Structures are given as C-alpha cells and as structure tokens.
Length: 528
Ligand code: HEM
Image (tube, rainbow, N blue to C red; front, side):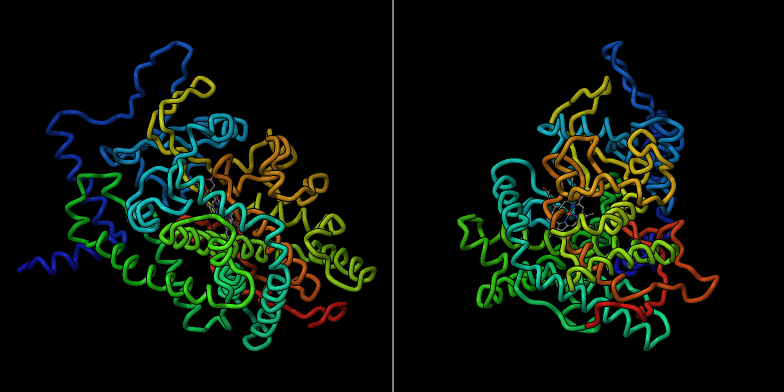
C-alpha cells in the first residue's frame, strides 16, 4: 500500500530530481482545471489600451497553465536567445501565474533599468530568497528599496569601495599566487587539473578574509567544503524548479508533501545562520580589518540580523560568480595559445621594467590583459539573467507596457552579442575590441550606455556593489597565471568545450567540466 511516508518519498524524488513525471502531473492537474472552464490558454496579448502602445510578443510554444516554464530546455539563455531572434528585443513569457519580460537590447535595457530605475529596482518575490535566504528580505540582494535596503546598500558600497579594497590587496595577491601554485602542483601530480575547486578556494578565501578576517587552507579543508556546500545549497534553492508553488499555486500541495519549504527552513535555521553567526563572532575578536568590524565601528548602525544577511550576500555573491568567470577565462585561453604568448609577453615587458607584477592600478600598462578579461566576460557571460528586477507599478517604455509585479530580466547571452553595441563580429572572440576602453568595469558600468563594456554586473541602482573587488581579483589571478604558466589541453583532441555550458546548473552559467594542463613557463621572470 502507498503509505503517506513512501508517497512523500516517491514524490520528493520525482519532484526534486526533475523526473519526467512532474510535467505530466502538472500538465494533468492544469488541464483538469483549464478544461473544466473550457478555456485553453493561448497567450493572447491583453487588449491594447492605446493605439500607440505595442504588444510584447510571446513565443508560441507554451503549455496550458505552466506556460513557458518547461520550454527552456537545459540551457535557458540559448533558448531565449533563439526566441529573441524570432520575436525581437523584448518578449513576454508566461511562467505559470507569473509574467516574465525578457529584454536583450542594451538601449532598451538601459531605459528600463536605469532611466526608469526608480520603479524597476525592486526584486520579485521568490520563496527561498525572501523568506529564508534573506531572513525576511533583510540584507541587500533580496530586500526591497526603502530604509532597510538603503542602509544595507550604503554599508556595502562603503566596505567594498576601492579605498577599502586597498587594505586587502596583499591578501588578494597572496591568494591568487597560491591559486597558481596549486594549479601547477595539481598538474604535476595528476598530469592534468580541473581548475574549478581551486578557483573556488581562491575566491572564497578573498571574500571570506574581507568579510570575516580568515581563510581556508586547502581544497579538502572540511570547513572550506562546508562553506562551499552552504553556497551551493543556496544556489540550488534559488533555482526556478525549487519554487514551483510560487509559479504554479496548484502544485503547492505536492510541494508540501515534498517538504521543500521544511528543507529550506532547516537549512537556514539549523545550518547556515548558526555557522554565519559563529564566523561573525570570531571575526570581532580577530586582529586586522574585516567587514564585521567595519559594520560595527564605522557608524553603519546595522542591526545584527541585517549584518548577518549582508555578509551572507557577500559570500554567496562573491564566490561562485568569480569561480565561474575565471573558469571560462582559463578554458577560453586554452584554445588560444598565440594569445597566451602575447599576454605573457606583455606582462614580461612590465616585469622587466618594474621588477614586479603589475597591480590593478597599473592595468593600463598591460592593455591586452585588461581587454582579454573584458572579452571573456562578454563572450561567455557569468549568469543567464543576472538577478531579476520587478516594477512597483505599470510602466511604459518605448511604447511597451511592463505590468506592475512582472519579473524583468536581461538575457545575458544575446545582449552580449548585440550587433549595435558590439558592431565588430559580435559572435567572435576578439579582445582587441576593448583596447580603447580600458576604464575599470566599475566605471564603465556606472557610466553612459555607449561606454558600457559588458552587462554582467547588472544595471542601475542594483548594480553589483562587488564590481571593483571582482575585477581586482580577476586581474590579479590572470596576470599571475600568465606570468608563470602556459595552459595546454590534455591531448591534441581534448580541449575544454566552450561552445556549450553545463546543463541545469542554476543561476550561473558554468562551463562543462574540463581538464587542462598548467605548465610552468621555462622563461618566466617571476617565481614564487
Ligand atoms: C564576476 C563576479 C560577479 C558578477 C558577474 C556579479 C554579478 C552581479 C549581478 C548581475 C547582480 C545583480 C545586479 C542587478 O540586479 O541588476 C549582483 C548583485 C550583487 N552582487 Fe555581484 N557579481 C560579482 C561579484 C560580486 C562580489 C565579489 C560581491 C561581494 C563581495 C558581490 C556582491 C553582490 C551583492 C551584495 C549584490 C546585490 C546588490 C543589490 O541587490 O542591491 N558580487 N552581482
């Protein structure tokens, strides 16, 4: 007999593992509801209220009730890029009971997120982000504009400001140098290496040291693995398929049996919050600067509950994003041995004159390095959609109505291949396109639209506050690698696959797992 417990277990398995049974159950439930009212949803656009208004087109491939939720395939960015090719720069998707507006035109995105930023800088509700991750919309990443968010955002911008990051440059230099040593040692030991875990250790260490004043020793350090596991668990809970009742209220009962929310609550209350509280308590007692101390000492006056979530935002926002970005960078560079040589030569020329590696402040003296870093992020963006925004009221942009409460996102894949913004071979990897735009990514992101180098850090009032820290880390890691190594494929016909991405990977776009060789340069001018 099917007891409640084994029904729950079976359901949990099918629901969580994205078993094909789910769409069947969902479609069946939805169809009953829909046919009973003899209405078949066909994504008719709402009646025009004004002849000057334009309808936002919608792909024809949706299902009743669930809409386009199961039409994305394993690589949502690619599917949506194809829809943009057919339907234009702005499209409307039905996500169960919710509406998503997706845009891939830089000018339109700028008008939506920046010009109309006062109305479009809200975050849409999702169960995990609002109720659990942010302990009830605290911190900044998932809180709403208003007193709380203003205070947390001001604190974040202050502790991550370039002059504060200067206090951590030695530690960033050490961590990125250790990264390269580990990549070389791992290649020597195994004949190849998969850099992902090493990247995670490096970038977690940088942000953890800044936030809590400490770091971790090795990729098998149990505490490191525990923190990475917490970040990955959060990323999984943030993914679309873990929030079905929010999109499909009809499946709330199944979700209850699957125990999804109970798992989210248990993770937040029993695993994450106690660990992060302990890290903060220990940070206050440690020598040297850290963000926990700055939040107490620099007059930010943030309640402890907000500080806890804000620090969690930093750790979650500042580890995976950088590990993914740098993994793409290394994989792409493996395909371009000539470019590796030119980059190494540029760094060597700097070392010959100055006797040391260039710092981020000296980046204009290694313009090719800066250009390659920017081009890798344009060519293979870090996230599918950045973080979603929503509007607090109906707004009209370029004759389109974006309804109150809709989720508004930029499709990072096709926005970065837009031929108006990137007129020279937008589909090709061409670092030289940036040789005349060496300003920091932070300055470019805050500047005029025509000066934006890429859109990976988002838009307007919500722009990533960690942009400067991120680019300092990437720059340091990049010059360390190419001052000391060459990256080679493990064999003539086994290069990292950079023409697709890891499937169903969550918010970030990860390259498929790969192995490469980090070979010590015989002519390196810098040794550790
Ligand atoms: C390559 C690295 C990174 C990428 C691609 C990235 C990307 C983003 C994006 C797309 C957003 C949302 C922007 C929007 O809503 O329009 C964001 C927000 C945020 N990021 Fe980053 N980020 C990176 C690194 C970092 C780092 C190093 C930190 C902190 C240490 C950080 C902390 C945050 C926080 C706290 C927010 C929320 C801001 C808000 O909602 O007001 N990020 N990031």
